[in-house]
Amino acid sequence: MPPIISFSKVSKFYGSHFAVGGFSLDIQAGNTVGLLGPNGAGKSTLLHILTGLVRPTSGQVSVFGKELQSNAIDIAFRMGALMERPTFYDHLTVRRNLKIHAQLAQRDVNLDRTLDLTNLIEYASVRAGTLSQGLRQRLGLAMAMLTEPELLVLDEPTSGLDPEATQDILTLLRRLVDETAVTILFSSHLMHEVEALCSHVAIIRKGRLVT
Image: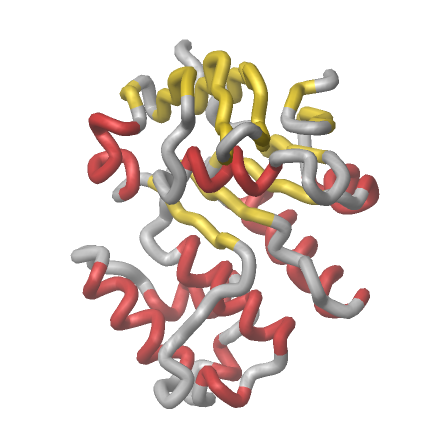
């Protein structure tokens, strides 16, 4: 079976500075893979490339067996992503934010199932602007999961959270791994996070795959 994600000799330069250099990695469907490395290692750049937010300088990325840049829209419909700090319509409720997201994605979804899976059901009628940072991250995760994607891309989803909120997010992701067949690519600079969640780990340093 071909990999669900394939990075082949991917590089990204900003002027003369490279953020990623000759990165190659295949990820199989159903795995939970952690990109582990210090801040500035190139993890976010790789995930921005994967989600189509940044174009690579060279190399090729394929997702679901399709070349990424020429099939970006088709791939996006099968992928969910949480990149850095999510933003919402703060004057609208949690449920309304999710409903608008579903409408924009042109998908019929089960809002209550997503609210339950992310432990947000009791906050469904709360305005997003009043949520704590931990709950906002949960809502961002709910948006990423809402369309039941085959692939979930998470860029340091616990960044800036206190230990309790961090554990909540990791527990939710562990539940997602246990209850669904979703493939997860998860970046972190913290060893204990990838230990708690991931089946495979790719260690990155200075834009290159170490092991």
